[in-house]
Length: 187
Image (tube, rainbow, N blue to C red):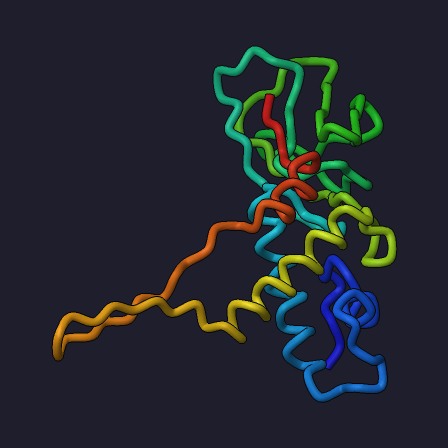
């Protein structure tokens, strides 16, 4: 099994962080699943793609809008493939693009429904994912493994009656701290 291109870290880097030998492949499938799951969870937390990929037909209804600016949901932007405004294809070369913040400025006001296909993400590939994000993923995976190991089940007993509770966890503070600077901010 190989990791999808959206994984925010590599199996080798995770194993190094966990102190697991690269030759020990006994838990590779589990580690890959956790990398994928934690990468997806981090993207939901950030509100942004970590590894760049194509976003297709993100609709923006600008009916009655009086603005020349449009902010895309995902950024930074690598490139824009197509823009369709009110059924008409727009030449991306006439637009001013703030790639870092995902803002497109058009010479005239946007109108109607705008559909855009573009490529966006914090990194071009897994190798260029910021180190803080990779470290956050490693800590997150380590936390999930610890929870699995401990089962974090609490219980209480009263006479013959006994009940167990699974203790749910919020995002670990060190993970949140490492990811915080990358969260999406909407204008």
